[in-house]
Length: 112
Length: 111
Image 1 (tube, rainbow over the protein chains, first blue to last red):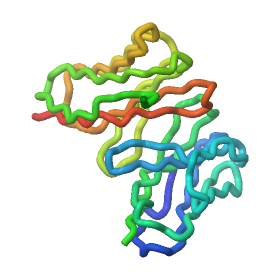
Image 2 (cartoon, rainbow over the protein chains, first blue to last red):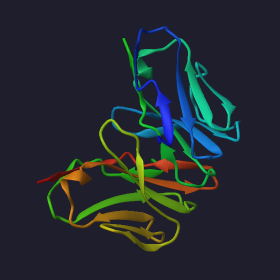
Image 3 (tube, one colour):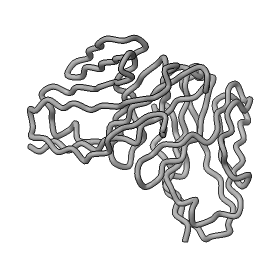
Image 4 (cartoon, one colour):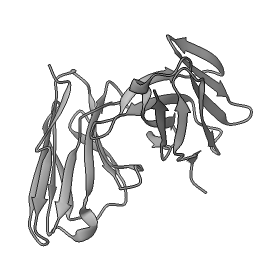
């Protein structure tokens, strides 16, 4: 059983479109995250939710909006996609904020 | 200056070699230290997690933390081709309430 699953795995779309990435965890964790990994493999946190409440919102354009319908899900909606949004987006979860994170396998977003 | 510095490599070693991967940090408030392994087209996978200075061993892997020098290491003994991956260090301090990741070191173990 996959612990942290993201869909879709690949997303190829045109500049200006709106897209969503879904994430689900079946580990019973309280905290979920979205990270962006650039081509140099640097992982940068975007958002962190604890029990459906936003606790970290790094400097991210407001075109990115996370939504947590329940503790097990954290979705990422992106409006007006730009070329610079091309990256791999990882969802992760942890028991608490100071505990190790479990990652999904990423969503590879390519903007044409 | 970045919170966590990690040499990106690439590092290439023959099978059976001992590999040493390192990270340095500037924030003395970091309390928890992790090493992740990331295979190509996969998410990072937790290898080691420690919160104190000293060594922690798990099979062929040893994590070492030196808080006085602000330096952490991961040693891989008897390296295997299946160890070929990118290795990321990560650290947590309750002041920032988030994990800070190194940029990763790309390792190739040649059969």
